Length: 492
Ligand SMILES: *[C@@H]1O[C@H](CO)[C@@H](O)[C@H](O)[C@H]1NC(C)=O
Ligand SMILES: *[C@@H]1O[C@H](CO)[C@@H](O)[C@H](O)[C@H]1NC(C)=O
Ligand SMILES: *[C@@H]1O[C@H](CO)[C@@H](O)[C@H](O)[C@H]1NC(C)=O
Ligand SMILES: *[C@@H]1O[C@H](CO)[C@@H](O)[C@H](O)[C@H]1NC(C)=O
Ligand SMILES: [Zn+2]
Image 1: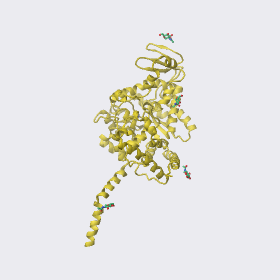
Image 2: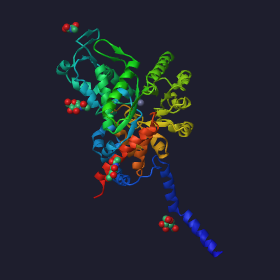
Image 3: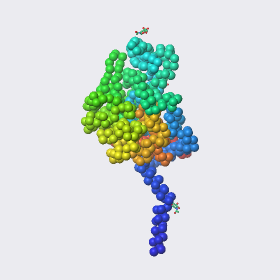
Image 4: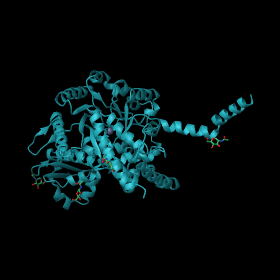
């Protein structure tokens, strides 16, 4: 009797012990988080210790100086500080797998883009409003434009290069004054294409540009991309223009050329993603194009999406009848819920995206407000492509610690990180967005396992045709990275 009571007291003492309960709750939560099922082994533990030391130094500094914590600040004000961060430098070297959310003509670095403005045969036309660019054989006069060789205008027009540089990116020192709301910043964003498209859609440059995109990804330790493209019209000096099929062919050719000289690179696939602000007739043209692309490029063509500011574009529901016809034929990768509104046609795009069987969701920023959609996302394992810096620059959120994807990460949803349009906000490759996710959107306790999971997710949620091969190649790169990092960071 007495021993029974002692036993009972003992059990309740252990179970009801507050600090045990607390520990259990913390562990239960940690085990839900993305990456928690990974077990680090051997040298990974040494590398993780180094990473966490650096993460905690930065977090502790931020905790003491909240006004200086990088993920809490606008990226335009912290770019050089990010590049100096040891955590960022670590992430740069880490084999990150794939980029699954990025737009073709906004992927190369701003530096490279600006350098293109020194190309031969480039002409410019200067109006009060903007500088237009175009490749020409010789100077021409149009009714609203006198085209002159760009090098002459560089010398003669005041502040020519300052103006031109501004037109190529969204970066502004006074960005808070210029970008007063999301419509304003999206308007600037759209206008960049007016300058950039004629610059990079000149055939020789077009080829060089995409080669540069792949080079910069490769240098950032990304080995595969599923890029979205509107398949812009490409031109040359002889008056030829190249339509969607020809342009898709150019992308395929460049990818193959790049892989010849970079055997560690796994490749690229194309997602046809034209603008969403169209009528049913145009949608039919898109669908016809999709069918031809699929037939002509069965391995290179990955699927379909629509782009452009969602709040001001057409909602998916407008095209449901048409889209239902192709949902069995091709993979869909809809941008959906890239908005702060709730109960609007934009966040309802999430409903249509999942009903149409989307393979992944672009942004899904509003997903937390749609609990049934969240259930479907989890049940059907639909990856959400989070682009932290894009969301900040396009004014959905400010402080990464308040980004809704924090919830998704803490609950082990299928999240991947994309870079969207790095060209326009001064970043390069994928590491800047990974840095924001790791430092601003995860727990202090979240470690190397999260980064490893992000890389694995980028392969598992891709539509690459041989995932075993992809995983094998990535694992080799990972082992090499762990080996090298171990020798660099082993405690003396
Ligand atoms: C509660 O459990 C912890 C950890 O097992 C132990 O260190 C502590 O002494 C316990 N406290 C009580 C009041 O039993
Ligand atoms: C751009 O040009 C400058 C000056 O020639 C050069 O130093 C830099 O490496 C170039 N950048 C790229 C990305 O090509
Ligand atoms: C374009 O017009 C300017 C004057 O407006 C003239 O000086 C120039 O020769 C013209 N160039 C061509 C190529 O017609
Ligand atoms: C890692 O290093 C060990 C010895 O330090 C070596 O045996 C192994 O082959 C290396 N692995 C890779 C992938 O480089
Ligand atoms: Zn996008």
